[in-house]
Length: 449
Ligand code: MTE
Ligand code: CO
Image (cartoon, rainbow, N blue to C red; front, side, top):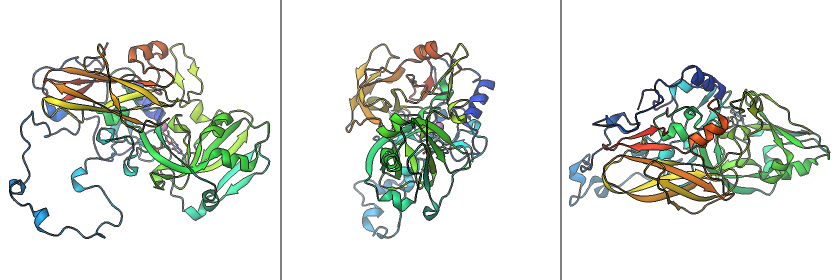
């Protein structure tokens, strides 16, 4: 693990373009990592792995007196009372399961990003306190009584809703993933960040409850000339995105809850837009206005930003949908091999086009593949959790996963993606990730070919 990636809240972040620029100015010193590390590479260098690797030795208990057949203290004495924690927090032993930032992607904390610890996720639901955050102008704090949502533009009846007004419409609830278009963006030219939290952690998946956007637009009455929606945030960044009416009337939600409780301030309290399967930037947080128009607005976030520069110098226009992608979350640089013999390979897969149909896993760098087990439920435009039993003989291995969605689309290898889009892109990197399992159990981010 290089010291480029450090845990904890670091002085934070530039705009996505900011780190894009820094990436271009400062490409990684040696993007071509050695394909195989030899000897005794320091396992303590793997992110979060310091002291964890036991090489198959028995783990030492912190207090041998608590081991069987002795009666441990927690069985002999009364525990904490039921009102000890009015709002629950994770047990102290799991305090390493936190969002983390990357120092060199961080200019100010107000324009920043941190990453979901996806290597710690068993299942497809992200706990609210672990959802990564991306703010372009800091986190707005909006008292619910002062909140208003306006609908204007090409509508029969311009409307202003209070939060209570929104709560009176019949709600809808669905799981959806949100992936920042810049997720894995630092990996376009070579393996760079040695941790799955950093390479793939700009993603979360929660259970949203809210009002279908269609319901509110119908309430205002869209004029026949209305073809586009502008969604605008109430934070200082002036976040605005154009959304085609077809999508707005299809599956978008004006959400007030995540995982059964009100949105976190980080996620846009009291209201955020949910745009299933489409790039995270369009999911406007602290939503204050929806304007109906007859053409896109071509605002900053959909022109100079969140646009992919192609090899011929032209740019891909409106790359809204997040294509199928997957990653092995364990083993990973943060989850090294602790012993030889039977293991479980675990990971996450998703597609902005629908459901995951299959995930193939390779342990030899993409030569041979076998299908992983998809854990139910497998939902549309949601994360899907997969696993595959694997026996590790102690040698080197190259782990890859490859998602196939229900449109038949197959997640590409990086060589194919670069052939189509060159190396100037930041956004929409959905290529296959490779982890090198070293003979000593440490796991590294590598690029093949
Ligand atoms: N909405 C507003 N109002 N302001 C923002 O800075 N960031 C966008 C989007 N919506 C942003 C916003 C980006 S780039 C992403 S990836 C997602 O919110 C991040 O959502 P999260 O913070 O819930 O992870
Ligand atoms: Co983003």
